Image 1 (cartoon, rainbow, N blue to C red):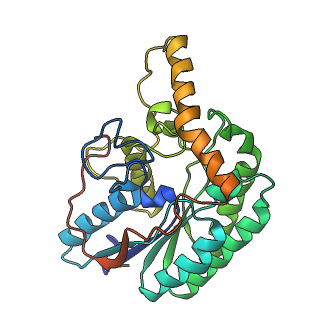
Image 2 (cartoon, helix red, strand yellow; image 1 turned 120 degrees about the horizontal axis):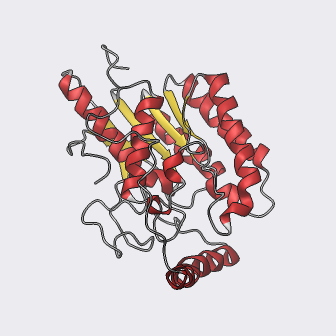
Length: 283
């Protein structure tokens, strides 16, 4: 950590689409840019956290650099075996290691084995001198189809807390975030967060690291104001679009043994200063 404890000097993020920042456009937000098929560029909670840490480091007159090695679709073995060694080579003092969602979604997933791989990665990072930021799985109880995985997702969340205790890591409690139990926090694919959702996660990450919240921002766990009831016809129409544009392509990739991240390089492989100033989360 930096000398006055205000932040970290080098942050490296590893993981899957959540950490890559999918469905948080780094630019104008509309229905097209929120679609998971959009080429990006994506921003995401890790970029937002880096912006907040960079602003605090600048106020303290200290250097700060950030790299993001996360790639959508990656499974825990790929994250731990490929991204973790690459992160260690960058000599960070803070690493976010978040994954497991893609593993848990697969039929017959061995959640204990996934957690064991995660713990191995955390142990390697801690041995290299980095503080580790983890995250639980989110609670999918309100998500169509995905809620079928709620049992294994809950077990994985429990594993994360246990691993964090063993290795003195910090945890973003996605499972317990009431704000994420609101459909407005989720992109049209119902798997990735909107800009507002990413912003809330970034604020929670600051709290998990023991840092003060960004001034003037909503509390990360504060639920949104209730929205008006939607007509049944609208719900049916949205479900139909979701099945056609998001579920069907996902199933096709699974049957073909492909991943949305195949051949895709990380968006920010080299640590460099963060030029963008932090913004109000609920933009």
